[in-house]
Image (cartoon, rainbow over all chains, first blue to last red; front, side):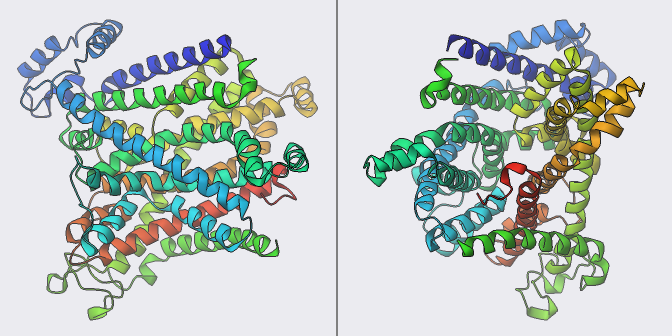
Length: 306
Length: 278
């Protein structure tokens, strides 16, 4: 168990180091002068020299990397080249918003997707099962921004029930969180169903039934429990897509999160904002993936003894 | 039971039909499109479907939505093919070398693959577009780079298995160079699993391309692209909801078709699925 923990922790740390390297080097991999990327295309040679001096771009790369890492670790993400403002506070303000959107989508997908899959498996091949699985395949194929637009069209424009933009109240969160979750919800429902269908044919399930256990007990204690570890893996793999979905969804609903900040920054070529945003979001993805790995300890007793 | 087997076997066929229709539409766009997708007519802006000869309505510049959707299939297909090709060209040799030669190269490649796979695709895309600027080839790279480790890992895994085969040992004993062994003797075994992954990557690529274009980071106007059309339509949602409906339907149906085809291919290639229906 300790070995498992240490290995996973080591892998997570390695990924974080790799991530910081990629984000740091992306500035230097870009064609042209990194100073020009920071200062903007219209900068004069004198301005470029100042930027190079101030950002330490004359130092050797490893030194620059170490300095950048030290600053980022203190929450200093540099300054936007518009108005010379430090971007750390902006990012920190937007970050919890994006986090709640993405994690909210994840929770909704799990809380609705898994039970729906279990019910579909219980009514296998019935009309309910076929309807649910058909909708799931369709849901998985719908791009998140289109889902978002359709929900606005229906619930804001037509029915006038929910606000179409902004953030802050529960009502504001419903449509964005639903949009972010839909594809993952559909996938989880499908996965749960096919895992359950297979597990219900296993010998230990037959044994449980034979000893007179009620259907409910067989389903939840025996079958679903064994479906949880693979489902945790799928959830880990979906994270990146959920986060990507949240980034796009923020733009649709005008939510002041990191995704929107980053998209604006790309258009303005405000590179430090993009770097900071990517770093923060990717750190969360790595952290949640690590938690998913830890969940195996709870979900799958076999892992505890290896 | 019968019901389900029927639907299952039909879903692969349905997927194939959708994919063929998509390819045909892209190839024959100038023939099937009623008008030029960029032709403007400000007197007939935001027409609802069916009016003034606009089968699916017109947009804010009076451009024909149907023609724009038809031409949009070309962009989606081009970006999908180019970006998956990009991932294949870099990922397959990396995976072959990592799996066949092993050792340091293997561990370095696989650790790097772990890192890239841990990052959200869209974020990788945003970083690449931020560094190289908006454009067709940047978009191809932005979408293709996350596929490199996916293909590399897949190829490495299969290579490890195939490299144990006796005919590979025999080829080596006969003095075949490593490159020949990798591409002539090992690679043909990987075509099956790669085909399945290529299908799913195509679907993901088309979705990501739509997403990046929707954010204004992908294809630029006046090129008709489905994601970009949806971004524009947002402004006119109240007066012209058809502008939101149809490009989205096109995108979702194409992705659905490719995914259904991919599922069927996976079941055909993966022996674990053979004879089973789950």
